[in-house]
Length: 125
Image (cartoon, rainbow, N blue to C red):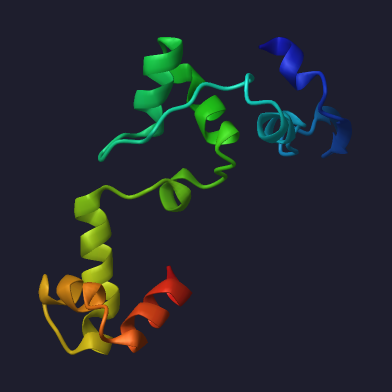
């Protein structure tokens, strides 16, 4: 693991020479070009990156690998929501547009005969 950080450049920060770990290495590029460098996993409802790190590596210390491999910078906003939280998000976001309340908003979004809601949904999400 220590070899990974050797590829990051050394920069001057506050008068000190430090490694710039904010840059991304070629790891993500290699993931896309070499299918044998990663293990496939389908996120299940409620899975967190810590759960996946523990499943594959036996420790939550490697959560950053799961996030890096999936090109996730902000786990609070980039990680998929659980089905429950996603429905709450949709209800909050589209209740005014649909003039519906609660789970009627979800039904409105699923209505294929109304093209305005589908276009708006795809544009925003």
